[in-house]
Image 1 (cartoon, rainbow, N blue to C red):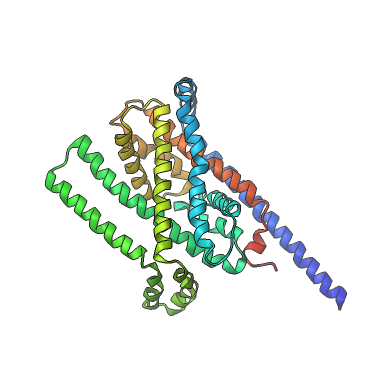
Image 2 (image 1 turned 90 degrees about the vertical axis):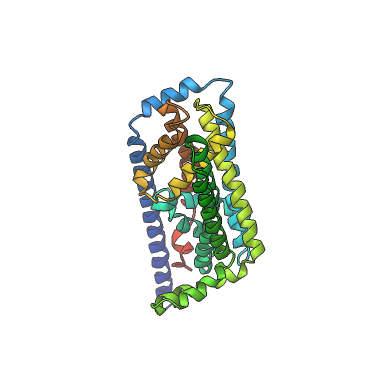
Length: 339
């Protein structure tokens, strides 16, 4: 009996290890294939590289250096934001929280609207808290999107007003609409624990019951907690917006910091409204940036280089780090299929 039990345990362990290697191998292959495809679709790589080399001078290199330095700051803010809520039900160190963010980026860069981030982050919490971590990620994502929507909407209105002109009545109406929208969305955000009650009214009780039991975690988040998350989200927004502006300066796009900030916020707003497949993500980012920044500079390569550079610094490099970190995790155990 002992030998039989041990044999089963060995088989289970061996099967788990095999499945882990299969999952990790598939993850590496998909990541490499997807990144290679995205980069190959950028048909101006030689021009982008030439632009980078020509721009690389002593008086401008500090723009690039600062944009790179701000990358870990950007994701550290996200780690603090996410980890702060996770600690409400499971103690997690800043190191693990940061690693979870990196792993989330690895899966996120492969999926539309970066929904894969949810799966990547749960690798760093106990299996029984997987759904709590998913819901926590949803809360922090909502907070970041609300900042994007609020700042982006106001910036887009100001951007159009200062550069193309806008009728005063239309300006007032637009600002009033944004104010009402912001008021409604933030009211819902600070009462997000009411989502459970809403689901109970859905006509699919089996679905609402399955989800609502996991939504109990929302009651752990006080309004003060949600306010802190919003503040971290705003600070993070300023950081990655500044990175984009620094890269624009590095590649020779001229303009005041304030006006460039309005344009950057407009770009981010449009991007957030287009949850494109990952294979079109880089191309779409460049096209959106071209539309917005076309009024500042006729140098399209500089604009594309800035957008492409931000993608490399803030997404590609961290996603690669996350891939390496993910390879050290027991994926099967993280999702509760191995004790």
